[in-house]
Image 1 (cartoon, rainbow, N blue to C red):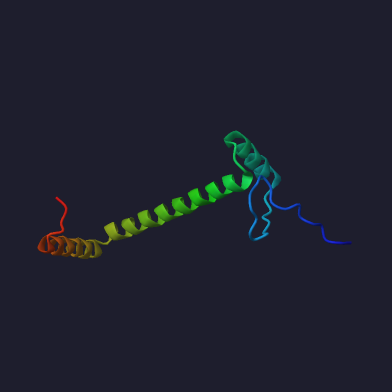
Image 2: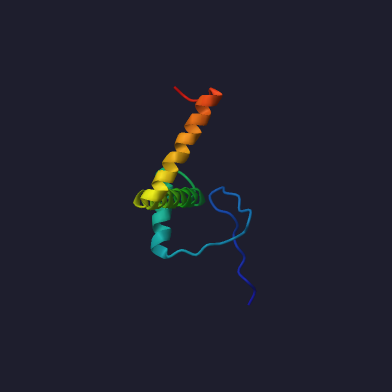
Amino acid sequence: MPAKKSSGPKDGEKNDSGALVRINPADKTLLQDLANKEGESMPRILHKAIELYRRERFLKQVNEGYERLNSDQKSLGNDFRERQAWVAAQDEWGQAES
């Protein structure tokens, strides 16, 4: 039996990679609903969701780093001294913000 041909990109989106992603039917229904409500294509809604997730993970990692730093007083002291050195250097160069 011949392979089923893809009908190509949907919703006016360019499909550079030709990659397909399988999602469960319930998620597809939600994606279609969001796209209809927002007046945007499903790929655009999916892109926005992925970008939001990426940013959320980044902020989570930053917060975890700060928690580790704050829990380690020696490291916290080193960080504070390093910041003071940068401020002193900026003052010396006349670049410190008022």
